[in-house]
Image 1 (cartoon, rainbow, N blue to C red):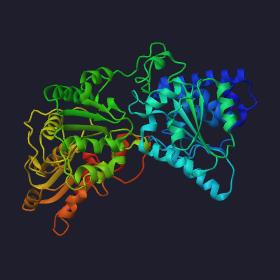
Image 2: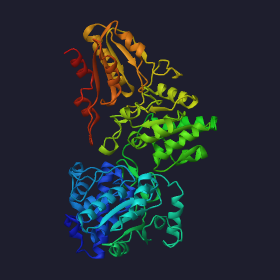
Image 3: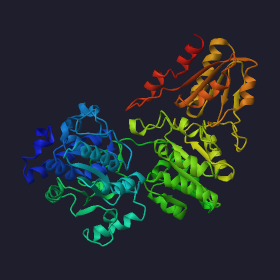
Image 4: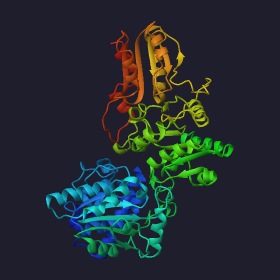
Length: 582
């Protein structure tokens, strides 16, 4: 096998074209081995194998610096830079992450998992090179789907200012995660259809030189193109047309499904993990579809991740014009839903917690200062959510709960979640964000409130004495178990409170607890610093009440098991019981 001889990019430069093509096949075998057993980003990596080989054949990494956008296209790069064992041999799967990572290799320059960043990061590398008087090539790799992101366009707009070597590889497979959305994709299509010759050219309009490669999976054509721009003295875009999922028929034909995958059977393409039971993504989709059919003013908005709330292609077609995918443009989405709400619409914007991090300014300035009644659904906002360092969902509470006018709600069960969502869509006084539960679908037979207009009013679920447990959202069930242990230990029932509102405190209720309680325990599924529990602790600061805050330590954690993190932070009923009765 040729791949076994490759320990660094230099090893492939003696290969013939025939050997390089065989190497591409072997890389795909390695990708298939890992992806079929561990899962990961399938389509983007299968489609970028030949381009990766050509890049490393022509350029001298790590002296020449290659920056991958999102890292969705970096698996073949990892295989060619000393990490092939993590794809070929099962026992080495855990040696690497799914993203570029400087801790793994000198060939990786940034730990990147969010989209639209590579051009800006590479601009910085190029500027520093120029300041030092160095001469290496700087290459940014970015997919066509990522071009809709504001930072990508800002980076491309700036790139011509460099007036020095800077190479942007646009990997155009005519797909984002789902289909592309936005006017710039009409120009990309025109460029593809005209072999790069159409008069209207987005990249030239932004002051960049331009080169088109129609056969983006042809190693010879790619080597010729990259050699022609190597050591260039000005910024240039090399626009390559690739096939997403190339080499695996299911991924070639069902591009959206195979953007990312769970472990699967290679022969059939069927997932090895068949989820059975209720799912908030599908239930949210069904609820919103029903709501949209009943009321034409209701509109659902996503930003390139439609299945984060269950909107598969068939569901998107069913929703019609009441469903909007803005592409990778979360900032635009938040500002747009503010405008929709201002003009009498009932918008719901949903995306992942870590993607909401990009929208702080729009939530604050465009939405909340204007106090427009849009609904934001925050998915995977939990220690139980995505567990890689670039997609952590545990920072939303400090970020969002401290923006004035925003009402941030944390449901504790399925019925409460949909009651909150229904109230939010129909009310017209507040911008509202709701955490989609992430600890499984928990049902209750209790009657839940239908109206949350009495802002910051907590709900006492069990009246007791001595100890009050204020358990927020996904951690409410931990609070229930803790309450049972306290009763068993002391013979007294503690008070159990569902606060529901993350953005404020119920002063009247908290004041009342002083009469017959000496301890308050707060539980929140997020970092403690700047979080919910600190609001409670601050309220009781001048009193004799002892407050125990439980949440996560402020840190970047990567590829963790939720149970391990909970134990490390003493967030189990047994450990909390030890603490409060120590």
